[in-house]
Length: 503
Image (cartoon, rainbow, N blue to C red):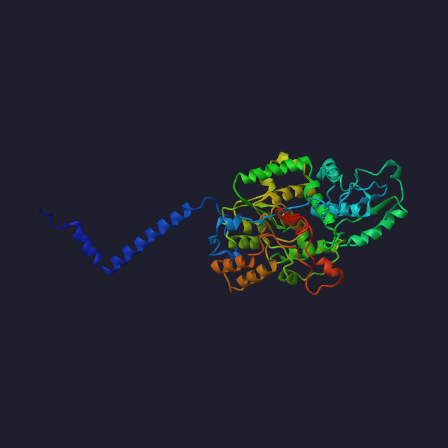
């Protein structure tokens, strides 16, 4: 075939073009650009949810380049729990007898937030049994930080409570008419007292028909009580003291809505104004925010400690983890960004300014305000204890429970989950984590395989497996020794948890 003069065949033109060094470089750049474009498109295709704005510059070294790193961990390791054959055992022993009729009455004012009141009420049930007194349904705290006006029957199922414990303690809704105006003795029971202390307290009723107890929290020892008294405390907290029907009904609905999305973590993120002010924890906050918290602490009369060193609090593990630190912790433990997390908390201090840093790691972060309708939540408006009860129900029923601080709710939920078969509770080692996060701040460690390995090793035995309660801290003496013991309601093993076939 003949070719037109001046128009050589295409392959020949390409060969001549490629002989030029400049042309070769140009072709290489084009090829690399095409490859990068393809990889970018593939990366975009893997993102299902819109990402929040990039982190601020001062957080970039925390979050990049390992924000999306996640260690490969089995589902069993992430979500599984093992009770090792242990189960709840609260049946009274053969020595336990029905309560004896008594004309001695005990009135109680339960103090604190929801779970402080719940455990205090059950302590008072046990005390009423020890002193053989009839318990009048307790008054709830209306003067605490939350200013909740709820009554006992607003939060709890009063008829069920009285019925469930009729074989243990006499309980009445109110004093008899003949005693309404009677002079009452007033007694502050000593914290963490044993059975012998209350044996002596019976003398109070010699001169008075009614004794009033103005505080109910931590009035009983964690250890050394008769097993029937310990089991009574468990029957009270885990079986008798049920929430009201409207709280139970909505709580169950919210659990079902969460479970329809798959497995989920309940995160008790105690990054709220009252907790930060009470503990004096100001790490990561602005100067004005730290001043606001200090002023609140100074104005709150019943908070005894006023001058607090925030740095010492943090390094000692006494501060709640920040939302950012919780995100780093959960990612290092192997939870992917698709994990659903229920936020069991009140109003987070600083709002989206801080919670957005957790959402960078876990976009599927939801609260009761997202799960429930406005109409469903309306009846609980301005009743913090009733709202906290919803969080409690969801936390107990979650696949994994993670508390960012060891407060009253965290301890109560962990104990309840142990009682129900040692459901998985991942308790962050705040002191150890702060040390690791400090290395990241200094640039001596980055997020990735090494950090993940260190954190997983640190928490191997902090997943809610069966164990006996911890004793007091070494070196503690006197009443301080009792203060440092692990709470009975945080871990009711061994009195209320037995091996299968044993009681």
